[in-house]
Amino acid sequence: MASDLIQQILDALSASDAPIFSSEAFPSTPSLNVKSALDRLQSRQMVEYETLEKEIVTLTAEGQEIAANGSHEAKVFAVVLAAMDGLKIADLPGIVGKENAKVGQGNAFKRGWIKKDKDLLRASADSIVDETQQQLLEVQKTKSLADKKVMLDLKRRKLVGLAKELAFKISKGPKYAREFVKEQTDLTPEMLANGSWETAHLKPYNFNAKGAPTPSGALHPLNKVRQEFRNIFFDMGFEEMPTNRFVETGFWNFDALFVPQQHPARDLQDTFYISDPAVADPPREDPPNDPHVPVKTKSDKPLDFQKYWDNVREVHEHGKFGSIGYRYPWSADESLRLVLRTHTTSISTYMLHKLAANPRPARFFSIDRVFRNESVDATHLAEFHQVEGVIADFGLTLGGLIGFMEVFFAKMGIHKLRFKPAYNPYTEPSMEIFGYHDGLGKWVEIGNSGMFRPEMLEAMGLP
Image 1 (cartoon, one colour):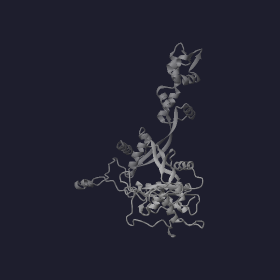
Image 2: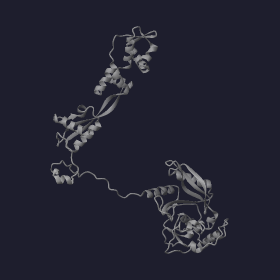
Image 3: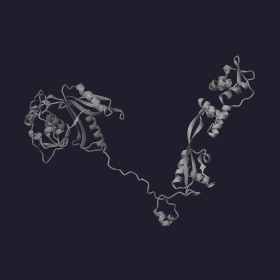
Image 4: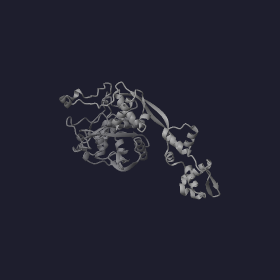
């Protein structure tokens, strides 16, 4: 036990004023245990110590076997000497073992202990000195070997090795005492009541000790993940869309994406509707001083919001741009109702309409909160974050979209993907994206994708 070793150190120091060495006073005690005990004593200034490091010679497993039972060559000599009429060479492995026969026979020949007589082995001496065993016993006792030539030979035979050993030079400290008294770390009400605090050994306060670090500002895990997504998009040449509008009209949130007005997603059970104000104006040009609106260039053509409004109405009611439409009476009042946005695709639609002023290749992304009227429980909230990206270019294909998804998700460490046909009212073809989760051991849906329908783009003026 640690307390026993501490007392042993104090007892060893009491015998003399001279320093002691742990390697001599406690040869069988591991150096880590000695250091732990010394640290406790040093913290009370009862001892002072100096760490000494030296190189020692140790026996390998084979070296320990030879030190205990003799060398291979000595074992071979012993059985050959015992065979009065000689020992057949072929019988040697069966008597001393294959390893002893293989190594010991050659070494015994080299030392002149045995000789060969046709197919027999005969002893050349009446007795021998097993120098290898003696050398290993010396190493075992002293952990050293003076003869460098012998040392190299034993290392070559893999009987010894070198290691580092820690030892400690220990001397008395300014507060040395023969006994290590356990210190009280707490002053309890009981000690105050019975007066034992007067004779108790209380541990002194260490005013220089550093306390536990105080938790301070840190990034929220969700914000860290969000930033990782942003960095991936930026690396792939995307521009971040303005997502500061949590409240949208039904036009941008649903109608421009051709979600029919009687669709269940627009029911009160799924969407949060604003009560005051309940409606907004039809789509129009944003104020010129809005800092979140992209700056216009000279090449931008004027946007006709009324024409866009009429095109969306016509696609819903009768069909246009190749679509047969939903064929129902579309309500302008329903389209102007204010909602908490249910997806950030409304922002993508808004930005694509802006792009129609100057059609060109572009890449947009957004990461922000969306809202659904769902029952809140341990795994669901009424709001969550949606990650969205839009690519506008010439000659885009479904294969190109799949290739982009593979690169995008690979940057997040997801390398196994599957794509499943899906339906979206504003894209065709559409695909659900599944990634294989190694921890769960199954495929998990991780995204939705598709190519915008002609009526979605042509209605806003994109070619």
